[in-house]
Image (cartoon, rainbow, N blue to C red):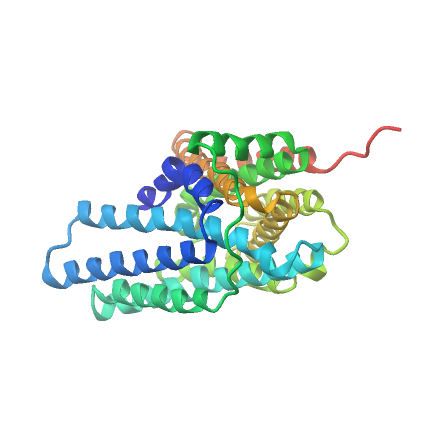
Length: 349
């Protein structure tokens, strides 16, 4: 079920980004919201009528994930059209964007979903469907920025143009690799973190969600203050520092083996994760022309999702072969090396 949510990015993410660059972006977001609302309404009805099955739920997750490929590419490409490309303005808007995303995804969504499921199994699906209708109403209030004006070339040629822009722009290439390293390291640990928390830190199962929520709190605070925190740093410097913070966080969690210290460190790590999202998002928006933004967002998502899946796979294998400490050590080494490579070098005289 979890894998089904990420599969669409790997399969249709790049074509979706190319199509977003051709179509009216506000209409794309509106259509994606309505499709997701419809799919989740059908899922709720299936649960109520007893027609729900694992294949049906997987199909629903695939459909929701496919719609998200279009929505996310359009939403990220719309931000600079509305806010402009000034560094401070992008940091401010992207910081608030990711702070609110973290509140919904990491703080409010999980406990509300659990409580709703306890009341009625179909209720989380119904509430989620309603949330996308609210989103569609909000999207309609956005200014209509029209189409990106992308050339009407073949779909494959359009995808290649987006890839070329990332690979030939050194700063974008460095940011894409940094994002991949960050996601790989994070999911390397997260894949088996619940076992480490319960077996080593002795965290009760009921309290695990609260421990993980500490990371979300740190992310929200950092996102809300992103403009001030990143004002004196370049995009690459911000991501390099965030990678270094992640390396220290995993070493600290491993060395401390204390639940309270782990909570504090996860909050620091959550702040680093949000600042990475802000720096990477602002960087690609500032360094990409409007008619390529949908495709460039899709390329970055492909890097991020692929690295996250690879990290989770590696984490499970390492924990099984060498114990629960191994993912922490490998992740810390990986992201520390990536931090050194991401830090911008001064040009030679």
